[in-house]
Amino acid sequence: MKKIITKDILEAWLDNVRPYAKDGKVADYIPALARSNPEDLAVAVVDLEDECVSAGALESQFTLQSISKVLSLAQALLDNGEDYVFERVGMEPSGDPFHSIYKLEQLNPSKPLNPMINAGALAVTNMIHGVTPDEKVGRLLSFIHDLTDDQSIRYNEEVSSSEFGTAYLNRSLCYYMKQHGVISGSVEENLDAYTKQCAIEVNIHHLARIGAIFANEGKDLNSGRQILPRHLARICKTFMVTCGMYDASGSFAIRVGIPAKSGVSGAVVGSVNGYGGIAVYGPALDDRGNSVVGLKLLELLSNRYDLSIF
Image 1 (cartoon, one colour):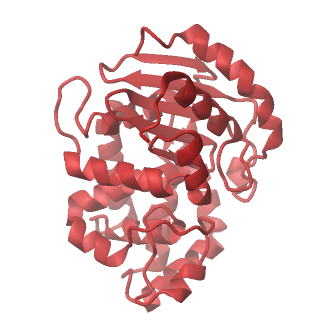
Image 2 (cartoon, helix red, strand yellow; image 1 turned 120 degrees about the vertical axis):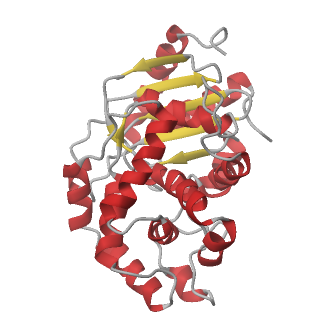
Image 3 (cartoon, one colour; image 1 turned 135 degrees about the horizontal axis):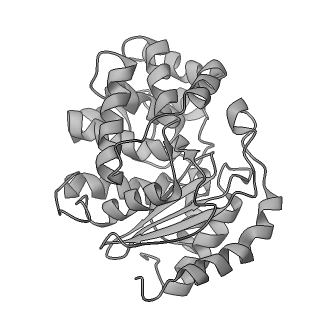
């Protein structure tokens, strides 16, 4: 992979898509994210030999936000097994915005359609083992430390506090699910864990390496150690294909065609079997919550190197 993608190529393509940032806006409904600079753009590609090619604002740190949903799903599956998790959360795309409560009211039993929408992610966080929110988040961070080979990663306290204080709709989702037995325990503690999970802070190289390990069937890129069982990595990547780009997942599958997950920080991670991980950061979002620059750049990369899995 390093023979066909160079830093110069990535820089040229990043400059090419930079003007698209003006077509989006940063996520201002989370106060701490409203200060993001839409001009801070970055891209990284990590191959299966752990070689990284990157360009742009490489020093930028950003929070995982909804990308954490893939990782919390992996952790919940490790903790509980497939049967337990999918008794409480479904496997189907929703076709609705990520924060919608509509389908919860329509379904019987009333469980979230999939783990990538907010309701499903909140239910998944509730399943992660740990007595306190900090224990749950600590276990998730240990998993991320393994994936990134970086023990220094933490969550951003300002962002998590900002999200916790304004999470009125997510509180509603939690209370609704608690009423129907989908989640248990304290709603506030579950929301505390969830907002800290979303506020875990990484850089573009960390994110591309996470994508590469999923592409490597859950094995560490250097040691070959099985960090995540192959079948669980496959489940996570399947959800990335069907639900990872919110209610734009179908059009993304046609135009780009790789397993990917976005977050409202403006980050997107992609994972291509036999190839590696691709990460893009651009805080300006479209009306569905996906990075405008990220979508365009991933489309260019996929078409140029024939990365679509379809």
